[in-house]
Length: 400
Image (tube, rainbow, N blue to C red):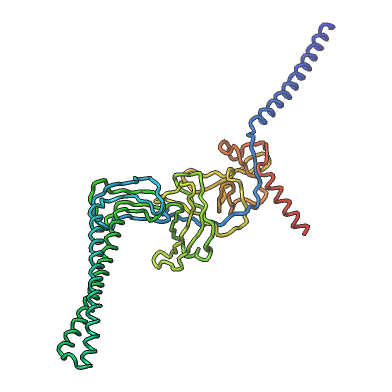
């Protein structure tokens, strides 16, 4: 009997111990499961949807053109003696870039000088003859009045006087023609030195030493790229939003990370009847020489500002092959996917037209690994300062 009671007691103790072990094991399992769930939650950074000021931009494309282009051609014919510049060389206004052979033109100057000297000598001789004829004429006039000489002698003196006077006029005309011929010869001699009319750089050369050139044939092209210009066409609806000196930002493919500031210099007041567009000229300085004539340019013009709901660009994702954007926002401790409609976008912010309200919390990091409904743990608020400033502004407005 005693032995039976002992067995029963041992059995009861064993059952109690077993229950205790099961209870402890269950608590440990629950604790491990909680830790495992916590470990599976994705750490993320969030940002609040806030009001942000956007610039209203107008975008267009155009081609950059040099400030000025000079197509050089000779004014006189002749073989080329010297080519003093090549493609890429800088030149200044008035610099000699090409010299033609000047032998014939030098001889022409000497011949013109000799002709002028002869014409001036002829004038001296004609003046002397005229002076003598004039004296004879005056004397004959007096003698005729005194009836000392016959009428025929007076008429002969008068004819000689008129002939001498015409000879002086003819000699002076000859002198004037010789002087003009000399000036022309000197100008032709001067034109054998071809000078650049502008400062810039040589971009095209079509002549070699020894080549015979003719007047009007292009031999060099020089462009001034100290600043460039671009003509862009904009819809007629924007004509009232622009004014001369408005800021323009120019981007080119050669420098994808740089923005070149420019300005509006002219607005064509006429709208094209077929395209319903108007033309705007943009001017951009080029002190560093990075921009070049012929470059394709994208132009952005700021025409106003507006405030709107915005999220950081890092929060945006786009469905592949579409223009549909979405974000993940935090609800409780879970990430929820939501499609949004986007308006203006700049380097840091995107305007939210539809899909979110102010103070919604959107995920800005780790979005590539997120799925809707996943657990998340918030590590930081990326635009906390922006949110605080917005709150301070609202508080100041409330106080006012």
